[in-house]
Amino acid sequence: MKNIIISYITIFLLIQSYSGALSTFNFDAWVERNHDNAHTSNSLSNPIINDMQWKFRDTLVNSTIYSNIIVLSDQSMIFVSSSNSTLITISKITFQGQPQWSQPIVLNTTITSTELIGNEYHGIILIYLFEIGQFQTISIENGDILWLSEKTFFNCSTPQIISYNFQGYSICQNGTNGKVSLYLYEFENTWTAIVPLDWLIYGDLQDDTVDLQSPVYDRELLAFIQTYNETFVHVDYKFNNTGLISMISIVDQDDISVWVPSYHNGISQYIVNQLNGVVVATDLETISLLVCVDGNSLYLDTYQPDGTPLYSQFLANDLNCSTVTQSKIGLLQDHTTVVVMFTILENNETISFLGLVSLSRLSMHWVIQNQQNHPLLDFVSTNQYSIYICQDSLLSLYNVTSRTTKTISYAPDTILMQCEMSVGENSISISSISTLGDIISMKAIDSVCLDLCPTNFTCGIGECICAPFYYPSSICDTFCNPSQTCSGNGVCSDDGSCICDPTTGYTGDTCSVCRKGYFGSNCNFHFDWTVVIIGGGLGFLATSAICIFACVTKPKNDKPSLFKRLKRKIFPKKKVAKRYNRTYNLLDNNENNNSDPILNTLPNQEINTSDDELNDNL
Image 1 (cartoon, helix red, strand yellow):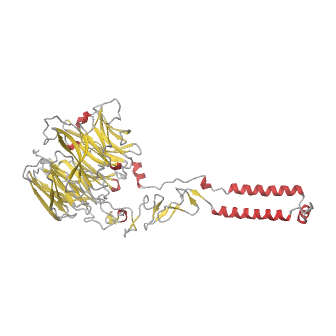
Image 2: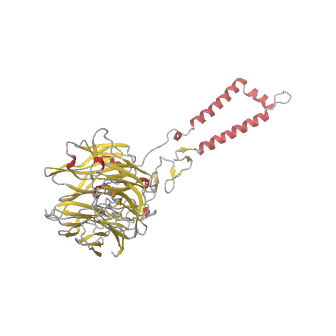
Image 3: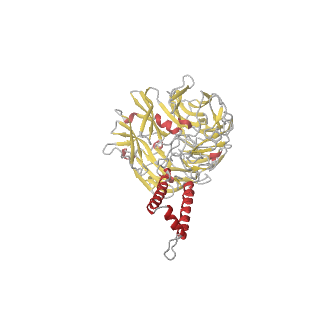
């Protein structure tokens, strides 16, 4: 293996979210490292359905710059196409591989570490030059250089773009009286300035003799992500040999809380260094991380944001935790199932694992277990519950529901030792380092859908078909998702309209209003107008009869009326009493028998979704 110096370039992009996006199909962009700032490694793009075939390959022999590939919302790519110690070249190509632009960036000093982030909302790419502590931006449209910072910012973490305000944030060192602290910085709206937020994370990391230009911590060991409620999560793997989680509020600079992993009380434990830090399941408001217990056991522990332990899943034991490498966790599209990957390196041999942990069902399923000498380097998940798995000698695509796998080999004699994937629509892009020291950028596409399918379509078996939740067949211009369009109270018909569940009280175009005769916050109370009308009519007749009877039988001079005298002759007194009693008893029984049985059996039936099939497989 050749000795090479690798510079890590990380490219991040963010696309604007529109409230009406559900009615028009948009391709998902791979917005940043691990796709998003919750580090889910999950894309809404659809996977390759037919056979996989290679579309694009670019090899940089003995390159010193390693970059992940970004995929824009139009499915064009931006990647590093050439480099040396004082020159890097950023290139943009279309989905079909046609060049759009290349921008060389000439430096007046040797660079060994550079990072790129981007913001598609503002149309820029931000470049951080590690050794000289400077930022600059270039245009996504044409690659023109737009801005260069004047101030230096040393040892900054990989910036994260926060979706709610399309801003970028980074943690950088700040020297005060010769000591170093970590501060949070924000990029202004125009991304032509970076300003400190004065939110101290840690203080006094080193003594007075520290050199600010030399790292005081490994930047690759720092995870910095956004979770629920406008809150950052910062992970320090080296803190006190246990690891430390910091929760930092964006809106309140005084709202900072810290905690250490404590699920396994009384036993030594520490956070295992992961490729993507921790993963945040925003739907469940949980934080999951890999933890080494007692130096020889590996667990996936899940906590509430305040550090309260929730669930611990045993993964492996009888190992030396220091031999665990290439560990990573992410989420499936349901955002309640954690994907876990790790490799154990012992005696120059590797044993690899990849499994699924359901946080809702508290269950575990292994996809790959005890795989010998073919290390797992990366994984990403997509729509339709599919997982791309980058191995040293081949690329795999695993479907969770069908438990089927398809594979494709790299070029002959190509063995990878590092891999980072970015998902596109019916495509997968890979940035990798081979055992020969070459930087290889490549892209696989669907063997049938060689080009992007039209709007609202996706690749199917042999042809383009409607994308998920689009109707009717072959037209695909109507969006219908039962949980959203039909408010979770119905299913979608073949033309994309809602068919409301008849066991509920809902009706309307979106199954969100109460049917006639139903009321309540959940339309679960039933009022039968037929009973009301019939009962009211009988009551009116009975009341009228009583009034007429009272008037006719009104006493006059204590002498019985003519009607009363005739009544006594026709109906003896004893029988009359029985007849009236029998009549009123019958009315009472009718009132009881007409009570609506729906009031006593409120339906609570759920509409089946594809997640049920997934859960059966975990």
